[in-house]
Structure formats: C-alpha cells, structure tokens
Length: 399
Ligand SMILES: *[C@@H]1O[C@H](CO)[C@@H](O)[C@H](O)[C@H]1NC(C)=O
Ligand SMILES: *[C@@H]1O[C@H](CO)[C@@H](O)[C@H](O)[C@H]1NC(C)=O
Ligand SMILES: *[C@@H]1O[C@H](CO)[C@@H](O)[C@H](O)[C@H]1NC(C)=O
Ligand SMILES: *[C@@H]1O[C@H](CO)[C@@H](O)[C@H](O)[C@H]1NC(C)=O
Image 1 (cartoon, rainbow, N blue to C red):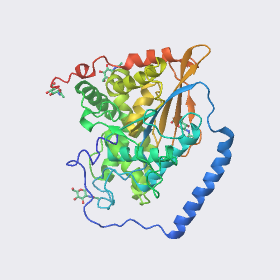
Image 2: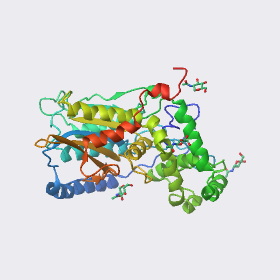
Image 3: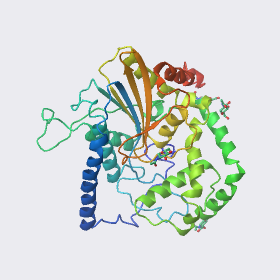
Image 4: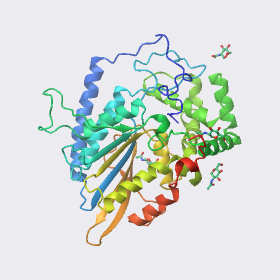
C-alpha cells in the first residue's frame, strides 16, 4: 500500500537516503540509441496494428472516466538488512522516475489514439476534468499523461519551442482527500481495517514466509502490510537494475505476491469497508454519470483520476471483482457511459488496461449486471456502496 509509507507524507517515519555510497549507473549512449530505436520501431509496428482496430468507433459513447495508477517510481522505504539502504535516489524516495514519466506520456498518447473519435483533439477546459492524489508522483503522472493526451494545436502553441500546454490538475491535501487517494481519516474503517489485517496476519499459511523474511531482513516481518512494503521496495530496486540479495530468490516475487495483493485488498475487503474507503469516489462517479444522463453537463465528456495501486484495487473490488490484483504502473480502469439514442437508454461498459503498453483495453463483464449493463442497474450497485453522510458514519467525532 504505497501511500501509507510515502516519504512525502510521513517524513519522520520513513528511512532517508543519506550518504552517497552508490551512484546511479549511467546508461551508455549506445544503449540509449538502441532503446530509442526500439521505441520508434515498436511505435511504427504498433501503428500498423493500431490502424486496424483504432481509433475506437462508437456512435453511442457519451462519457469516459479513467482512473489510473501513477508511473514507475523509486522505492519508498528500506529494511534493516537492505544492501541499498544508503542508495542515492536523485529525486528521493517514492518519486516518479524518468521511465515513469515516459510511461504516463505514452499512456496519454494511447488514450488519444484510442478515443480519437471521441476526445476532441484540442483541449478545452469545459470537456475535461482531472483530479489527482496530492502525492507528487501522482500529480506528475497526471501532467505527463496530459502532455501525451493533449499536445497543443497550432492555435494553442504559446511558446515556439515548447510543444506542451498547461492543463489543470486538481487535488485535495492528503488529510482531506477521501476521493482519489482516500487518505482522509475515517475512524470506523480504520478499526475495520485493523481487524481484517490482524485476521490475515494470523493466517497460518503465511507463518513460514514471515519467519523466513524476518530472519533475512533482520526485522520483524509478521504482517501482510510489512510484506507489502518489502515487496514494493524489492520490485522497484529490481526495476532500477539493482541486484537483489540472494535470499530474495526463494520468495520474491512468487511467494510474496499473494500477501502483497491481499494487503492492497484489505482497505476494500468487504462491502462495509468499501463504503468508507471507496464510497466517496463512487459517489463522484455516480454524479458524473448522472450529470451526463440528465444533460446537466453535456460538455464534460472526460474525467481523469490519478491515484495509487491501492486505489485501483479498491475501485476494482467495489465494481464487484474479487480476484486479487497487482496493478502495474499506469494500470487503468475505464468506465464508459453509452447512449442508445433510438431506444433512449443508457448503458455502462467497463475496461481494464493492465499497463501502459497495452494497445486495446480489456473489457470486463460487471458481475452484478447483465450485458449490456444498463445505467440504472449500474447506479443501483453504486448506491449500495455510497454512504449518506461519510463523516458521521465514519464516527469522526472530532469533526
Ligand atoms: C541484525 O541486527 C543486529 C542488531 O540490530 C545487528 O547486530 C546485525 O549486524 C544485523 N545483521 C544484519 C545482517 O544486518
Ligand atoms: C467487513 O469486515 C469488518 C471487519 O472485520 C466487519 O466488522 C464487517 O462486519 C464486515 N462486513 C461484511 C459485510 O462482511
Ligand atoms: C490483465 O490483468 C487481469 C487482471 O489481473 C488478468 O486477468 C489478465 O490476464 C491480464 N492480462 C494480461 C495480458 O496480462
Ligand atoms: C476517533 O475516535 C476516537 C475515540 O473513539 C477519538 O478520540 C478521535 O478523536 C476520533 N477521530 C476523529 C478524527 O474524530
């Protein structure tokens, strides 16, 4: 669960990269050229494939809501025996890397070509609304995504050398955000979460793994949450090209993956906790759909949310999918609202794009709904998970 031990939010608790024992290896120019060449080639190839299936043709599409996880980042924490404890990450812990920026830019371009017949080529404030978690890597992911989605038209070029235009990204501070990052404190769900966590931690099937990890990390590893942090750290160290210690080979990623995914799922484990952790976001989604259906807001046709792995999982689970999920960088959930004009009816389609390389998102059948899923059936499902008064139901007595 990446925002919990986010360095930008919990400075006092997070380990800091102090001295420069290691330096970031410099890529040789040759590698850069090869990588660039491959990128160009794959784009060309991608385009050939693309031209057959894209742009997405739909006469019924009315509204698109995209929720993605940010791009690749540096590790957020360390562990006792970590050989890279003092590694110098130039932009600090938990920061979006250049590769991450490129991923999100590419993702923006993918959505641009996918929805070329729907999203107007020029950016207009009235069409699009973007919200992000306040974490820097999410804000930066949103900006780079938008750079790919909305390159300025000739009219919009405001600087002869910068083919980029500013597009607003809205966010609430962490302690007020119960929508995107879902980090606003909620007493009741916190208590439920702790109960669920304790229950999973006591599961005998993890005992052996916990023993092994505790021994090798030289610190207590008796919780799926700690395994979650460790898994994330190892994954991002590995992506950065660092050689993981030998002992990790027995457990990473395979044996650690289930407890890791389970930890991500706990905040949306059952319907009661979903109501608190995901309900406010679902409330927004319901509002967006409603505004479109009732013509309150006919211009706005695209909503974009930039959040964390755990938020993607929460949305996925709240939409009825019980399968444990490990969202990759830039993984996105897409909700589409369609209108069958002649029948005067609306329906909803759902998609998941596993990562930023996928060309065509995978359509998911909503488990609580027929196919096509009517808007009213979809709304009915959302209503079961939207609290009437979040603050009061959370039992936040000091608010
Ligand atoms: C484990 O921790 C102990 C006590 O903190 C320390 O003496 C020892 O060197 C550590 N071992 C490793 C492998 O980090
Ligand atoms: C969800 O889990 C919490 C914590 O264990 C529990 O209090 C609540 O009753 C559960 N809700 C459902 C619908 O199972
Ligand atoms: C994409 O993610 C879903 C959900 O985890 C999974 O079922 C599917 O196999 C994945 N597809 C690919 C191509 O990895
Ligand atoms: C949560 O409840 C506890 C007591 O049960 C109280 O002390 C605390 O202030 C509450 N938190 C909020 C945000 O209201």
